Image 1: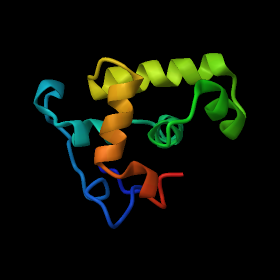
Image 2 (image 1 turned 180 degrees about the vertical axis):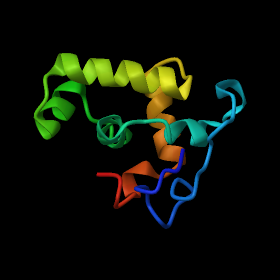
Image 3 (image 1 turned 90 degrees about the vertical axis):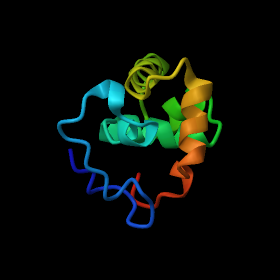
Image 4 (image 1 turned 45 degrees about the vertical axis):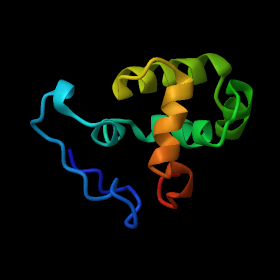
Length: 100
């Protein structure tokens, strides 16, 4: 899967993880599996936003935010939103200008 909508200045842009088994993928490669909307939620998580803040910013319900977070946690293969936020921080997601 080519993540061409990602930031040109970071490693997320040129990532190509097609054909690799999920268990062999790094956290960075797993980030490329996120949908556009999950990416939006992921960016807001990296800023420390609460579910309520995310729902207000994206004009979705808190229940939908929780569903997106659950999907993000599963795709990144982490234990919760805190670890997901750490992954986003490590890969400077909040500074990615095209990840909106």
